[in-house]
Length: 561
Ligand SMILES: *[C@@H]1O[C@H](CO)[C@@H](O)[C@H](O)[C@H]1NC(C)=O
Ligand SMILES: *[C@@H]1O[C@H](CO)[C@@H](O)[C@H](O)[C@H]1NC(C)=O
Ligand SMILES: *[C@@H]1O[C@H](CO)[C@@H](O)[C@H](O)[C@H]1NC(C)=O
Ligand SMILES: *[C@@H]1O[C@H](CO)[C@@H](O)[C@H](O)[C@H]1NC(C)=O
Ligand SMILES: *[C@@H]1O[C@H](CO)[C@@H](O)[C@H](O)[C@H]1NC(C)=O
Ligand SMILES: *[C@@H]1O[C@H](CO)[C@@H](O)[C@H](O)[C@H]1NC(C)=O
Ligand SMILES: *[C@@H]1O[C@H](CO)[C@@H](O)[C@H](O)[C@H]1NC(C)=O
Ligand SMILES: *[C@@H]1O[C@H](CO)[C@@H](O)[C@H](O)[C@H]1NC(C)=O
Ligand SMILES: *[C@@H]1O[C@H](CO)[C@@H](O)[C@H](O)[C@H]1NC(C)=O
Ligand SMILES: [Cu+2]
Image (cartoon, rainbow, N blue to C red; front, side):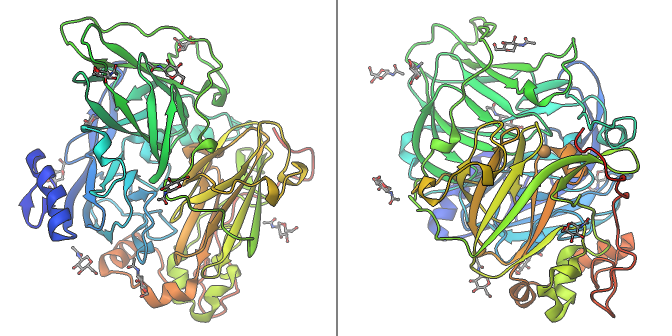
C-alpha cells in the first residue's frame, strides 16, 4: 500500500501540503485518501526495552492525518496484525451523518478481524487539533494512536504565527495491553490498581529537539495520546498563549504551564526569543496522583528542547517543586462567545463507583451499571429495530443506553464517588463545562450551586477531568443524530466498564445512515450479528435472553475498595 496519502490521485509529499492548503481555499473541498496497512513493528522509544508495537505501513510513530476544513477523508484500513482485531476512532470529530464511521467496536461497527479491510469515509467540518486511535480491546496504548490536524484557512489566528508544530505527549508501557489487562482485571488485583507506565514520551520519543528561529512565532498543537497519565507541560524561558482546546478556538490566554489529561488537546503560540544564546528544555511530567504506587526506578518526567543553536548544549531542566499550578482551563472563553445553552430538557446523572464483582476483579460503574458490550453493535440495533429504536431497553441493560430526542438541551451530572481523577469524553459533541467542583466536594446535589453560578460563556471541549470525589455538570445540545459513547479516557477504565451510550435521535439515524457492504462484511467474517436487540433477538425486541452480562454482584456489604 502507498505510504503517503493520496490527494485526487496524486502522491502527497511535504511540498504538496502547502498546495493542499491553497487547493482547499481556491477550489473548495478535496478528498484526501490514506491507505493504512496496520502491522506489528518493533520499537524502543525510551531506550529501555524493545517491544512489539502497532505501526502503520511499517512505520511508528504512525502518520499524522492532515485535512482542510470541508474535506472528505477516506481511510482504507487493512488489518495485517494477524492476531488482533482493530478499529479506528477519530477523536473529537463530530461525524455528522456519519456515526457509522466513528470507530468504537460493538458500538458503531464490528472490530475489524485480522486479514480484513474496512473503509472510513466522512467529511470534516470543524477546524483544530484532534487525534485518531484504536477503539477496541484497550488496544491503542500498544501504538495505534496519532495526531489528526484539521487546517483552517480562515483561522482567526492565522496571521499571528509563522509556522506550526504538532507535538504529542504520552505514557509508555514495556508490556503489551492484552497481558496487562488480564492482570488488571483479575482477582489478583482486587483494588483495581492500574498498571503504572514505564516512561513518559514527548512526540513518542525521549530525544525531541524542536529547532526554532529567533523572532518567529510558532503554533504548537499538542495532543495527549497517552493511555492513562495526565501531564503537566512547560517550556523553560517561554510562555504559551492558548488559542484552542479540543477543536474549540479560545480567546488568547497566557499560561506558563498547562495540564493535559489523556485525550485532551491544546494549541498555543510560542514566540521565539530574539537571541540564540542558549537552548531551552521542554518538560512533560506525568501526574503521579493517578498512580497507586510510584516504582523506585520510574522517571515520570521527559525532557525535549527548543533548539536555537544546535552547537550549544541541551541543558537539564530546572527542578520545580510539585504540586504544580497549571493554567485552569475552566477560565477559557470560546472565541465564538457561544453563551450558556438554555435550561435542560433532560438531566442525566451518573455516579462514578469502583467495586468488585463476584469474579473478584474490580469494575467501574456509572450508577449501578458496568458497561458490557452487546452482541449486536448498538448502531446496528438502531438500524434494525424500527420504531422500537426509541426504547432504550432494546440496547440492553449493560450498554447503559440513554435515548435522546433531537435538539434537546441535555445536562450531564457526574458525581465522582472515587478518590481518583477521571478525564471524561463524549463522542460526537463538545460540551459546555458549566460546573466543575474542587476535590472532595461530594455530589453535585451537595454543592449548593444553581443556574446563577453558571458561567455566561462557558468553556467548551470534548474531554474534561472530574476531580477526586468531586462533581461536574456538562451541557450540550443533542443536534447530532448518532450513537455516541460517553466514557472515561483512561484506557484501564474503559475496559473496567466506565462507559455509557447515548442514542441520539434514532429515527433520524434510520433515515440518514446506511451501512456500507465492507462494514457488514467484517461482522460476517467475525460471526457477529448485525440485526436484533442487544441480545440478537428480533422477534420480541424486549426479550434480552442471552445478552452479554458482567459477572454477578457480591452479596450486599461495604462498598468501595
Ligand atoms: C501489509 O504489510 C504486511 C507486513 O509488512 C505485508 O506483508 C503486506 O504485503 C502488506 N499488504 C499490503 C496490501 O501492502
Ligand atoms: C445531514 O443529513 C441531514 C438530513 O439528510 C441534512 O439535512 C444535513 O444537511 C446533513 N448534514 C451534513 C453536515 O451533511
Ligand atoms: C465516500 O463517500 C462518498 C459519499 O457517499 C462516495 O461518493 C464515495 O464513493 C465514497 N468513497 C469511497 C472510497 O468509498
Ligand atoms: C513530531 O513527530 C512528527 C512525526 O511523527 C513530526 O511530523 C512532528 O513535526 C514532530 N513534532 C515536533 C515538534 O518536532
Ligand atoms: C510568563 O508569564 C508570567 C506571568 O504571566 C510572567 O511573570 C513571566 O515573566 C512570563 N515569562 C516569560 C518568559 O515571558
Ligand atoms: C524581539 O525584538 C523585537 C524588535 O526589537 C521586539 O519587538 C520583540 O518584543 C522581541 N521579542 C522578544 C520575545 O523578546
Ligand atoms: C520530575 O520533575 C519535577 C519538576 O521539576 C521534579 O519535582 C521531580 O522530582 C522530577 N521527578 C524525577 C523522578 O526526576
Ligand atoms: C466575542 O466577544 C468579544 C468581546 O468580548 C468581541 O471582541 C469578539 O469580536 C466576539 N467574537 C465573536 C466571534 O463574535
Ligand atoms: C439499577 O438500579 C435500578 C434502580 O434501583 C434498578 O431498577 C435496576 O434494576 C438496577 N440495575 C442493575 C443492573 O442492577
Ligand atoms: Cu477513569
